[in-house]
Amino acid sequence: MAGLHQKLEMRQGQSLVMTPQLQQAIKLLQLSNIELSAFVEEELERNPLLERDERSDEPEAVELKAADSRKELELDGSAHAEANDAVDVDADVLNSTDSKSDMAGMDAGMSSASWSGANKGGSFDGGDYDAAANSSREKSLAEHLHDQLSLAGADPVTRLIAAHLIDLADDDGYMRSDLDEVAERLGVKTGNVAAALDMIQGFEPAGIMARDLSECLALQLKDRNRLDPAMAKLLDHLDRLAKHDYAALQSICGVDAEDLDDMIAELRSLTPKPGLAYGADNSRAIEPDVFVRENPDGSWRIELNTDTLPRVLVNQSYAAEISAAARSEEDKTFITDCAQNASWLVKSLDQRARTILKVASEIVRQQDLFLAKGVAFLRPLNLKTVADAIEMHESTVSRVTSNKYVATPRGLFELKYFFTSSIPSSGGGEAHSAEAVRYRIKALIDGETLDEIMSDDALVERLRDEGIDIARRTVAKYREAMNIPSSIQRRRMLKRAS
Image (cartoon, rainbow, N blue to C red; front, side, top):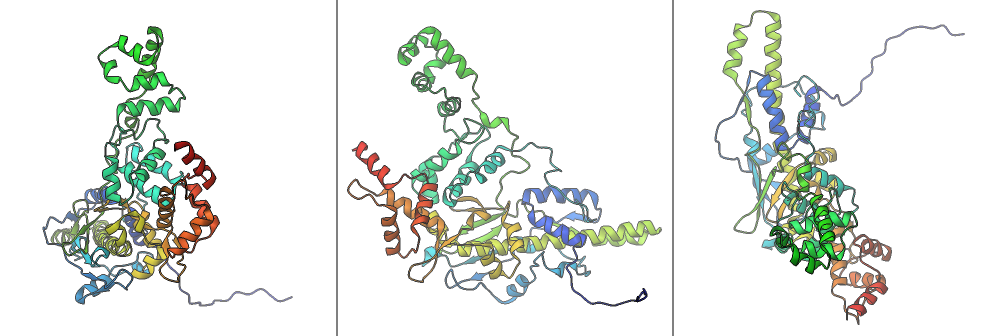
């Protein structure tokens, strides 16, 4: 039996060490500008070496050029070197012990980018920072509706339209915007917007997203299965109810005085402002993190929202003053920690701004046809495509696109909504966005006449003639997801309508 013995071995290996600074940089990347501002306010109170950057420097421009929307992103001159400084927070470069305490704040956070468009041709001590835990507010109405939307199983085009409608709702829970204007802005038919609105109106609380009081009350009665013809007539004449014209209402509704009293009592049990049941969306107001504006020459300009982007710097003179006055080891350690944490915060904010701008710029470059022509022209796009183009990790792109909003000429959207699946081209050309294919299927069906009702097989042939290689079962799946009846049912419906 061999004897037991001890020995020492040296092994060399590589590993990614999640330092507190790396963890903090990742957390900052996930926060919206509003949440980030709240975090920075805490750091300003905690760290005496930090101060707000009140300078009014002009934004530093980074020109991104693309001959067309499919070519590699190119950067000019010194801008190229600066863009390469953008650090992927998932890489081990953040484990470096080098500290640039003389960093001058967020100049790069105000950077902007433009290129030719298609229409022209918590603290730094390792503790966790939880934005939700640091907020005393209740869940907002918008958050509640977005949570239900994520579980609704809607196709991505409907989901994008619905998300935009939710963001248009007021605090009372009403959708006051004109559907025709929304449809024109998004580049879709009014029917598509109405369908998305109808879906949201089925969410909780009952009565939400109504366009007026009558519709709000009708939705609540429908939810209770109490919307009978007499009640519908009463809702159509709420002005007479306000004038207490009960005799006229009895005649209009075809009921007696007792029934009318019961109907009025039921109306009074409803909620005229269902949105007020949820917390005001103040600490997480939907403010755009990125602006996309069209230049006069038809190109797009991308800028970070500097109004909500906190800017801080390290007060070097004060740091030197109190460092010289420190006597005890405890004081010296405290000052050193404050200086290191302040430097890392400045550096992390700078990296965050560069990363968001870089990711948003690539998304806009990929989806410029959407900006120019509407939802039907969304291109297939996934995290890997963007990550490869800007040489970052997919998880970084995922963090950047969650909870970040971009204001475009077509409205306000969360960045993650621009990622879509793809359908191959029958001619071996450019793939088609699944959302665009769904939109095309609906357009073909909407254009049917009684003499020309297309089966799923006929839709497949028509789409293949247009260069879209799609299977029959996929067409059927998309059609059913949009709640479109079969060809036989559609023929019957058209016969009844004629």
